[in-house]
Image (cartoon, rainbow, N blue to C red; front, side, top):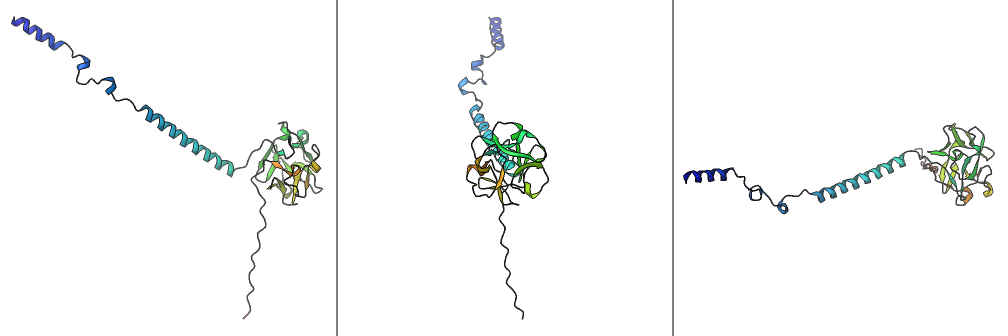
Length: 208
């Protein structure tokens, strides 16, 4: 009898405690769940902040550096600034031609210079015609935004489609139709004409 009792106690000690009654057991609904929703909301907020920062940085960069434009469109619908036959030689006439995305219509506006290729610049000639010449940095190659068009400050004349005749060589006109299709271009450069500042008048000092 005593032997049977000792055997029962020994067997009871060896049996593991059922996991559901174990002191460290926690029911599924009482277990701590990972904060998935909080993490997801936090990640979304971080992504939005990064997106806003990226937009701000992009805006600052584009406002401080030259704009690179693939084509310059005339105010006459469907026509673009065009280096005739994409010749890329000095004296090549510049026209307004049907926009076609070709290399002849690839222009870069950098500050107050309008470039075609790496070395040709839009140039106003003394006979009021427009050509592409080798870039020299001369005053006749400076173009600034004026209302809806481009003005060459040295001549005070504006880039124009003569009498609205497309495919004709462009001219520099009197800047009287800057809101009209023949003198309107887009997009415009960030360079603008700075009006001359008045010279301060210093009162004369009377001799004592």
